[in-house]
Amino acid sequence: MEKIRGLGNGIRTVRLEILRTQKHDFGVFGELWIDGEKFCSTCEQPWANNKPFHSCVPAGEYQVVPWKSDRFGDVVALFSPALSVYLHESDIPQNTSGRFACLIHNANWPSQVEGCIAVGEQIVPVEPYGLGVSCSKKTLWKLQQRWGNRLGLTAKITWAPGVLS
Image 1 (tube, rainbow, N blue to C red):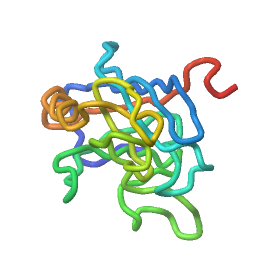
Image 2: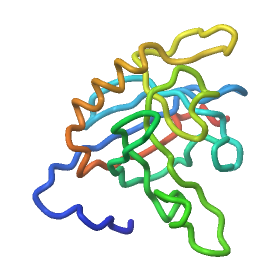
Image 3: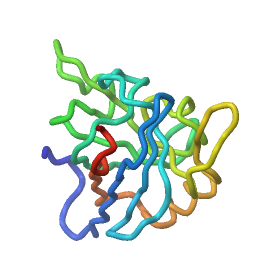
């Protein structure tokens, strides 16, 4: 995986793992683990052939970098050139397709995430949307406390066995 400049030695690595456990026509739901400990639930849009702003984030390995969002504050962005996921639109190589600004932020149901990942305490019924995640702002705040300065983060996104069947 390509390294992002500025992540040098001496930074403690924090490993995020997102295990997708439910797939529905309206969204994808799962669990976010930090260093092997379950931390919260996740919510994404359904897979839509990796269409920017409409598809869940591709499964795979990522570097996770600090991102300042006008809408969500201090969050993180996923970065993996191998998966065609970049930080900025201008980072996408010419004559190729890719995604950018795939963030982890607060939201309660899949239609709010626009190709990103929302966090919440638990997966709950949300009318009229089907399912969503609860207490998203509170969960994001706790996550921000846990990941600290947001340097040295990595992530792996996987599907639980049988979910894609």
